[in-house]
Length: 262
View (cartoon, rainbow, N blue to C red):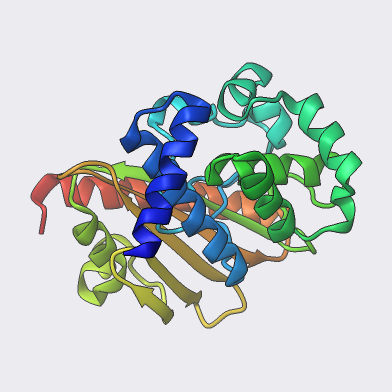
């Protein structure tokens, strides 16, 4: 009871500060707490094919569809700063790229890990989890800590995301149920590492060394969204191939589930 009262007090304090409704303020605080817990646990953010997070940390609601960045231009992966316009970043986080880069430099961002930077943005500046990851990746790219499409510390990742008109449990089953998975992802050997329904799915790919990390979030009673990151890829060229592969396979998944729902 004491914890509940304390949380309600925090919600009301945020309402007074931001002018948000109780529901909105509560949602932001819950998302922030979830993000902090996952960062403390060493969670790996699910990143998009150009090195941008395609969704929030698994289990956290993503930004609305209208807030998603445009896809990178043809001919190569674009960095975060090229993909996310200043006006959109300013609207969602309160600062443009120049403002965040300067602030992170002043804080000593290059001396901190990815998780530490993202946590600092969430806790010290109230940046929502998805956008904290976006700013973190953009900063790391701008300061030469990773190339577009590359993960911090080396290696590349690829993947993609889709919104599918089925409940989130059904979307999760498309990965976790082996028979169903074969219908849209044939001839691929997966060794499941962890599967937490209906939030996350992690598996080694074709015997390794690469792996996939998939996050799922509901987007309504009969709609849900997934983001898949194919990690530990050894080159930008292979990452580009996997990006195209996942675009094709996620399209096949969407068609399968939406056509017959079985």
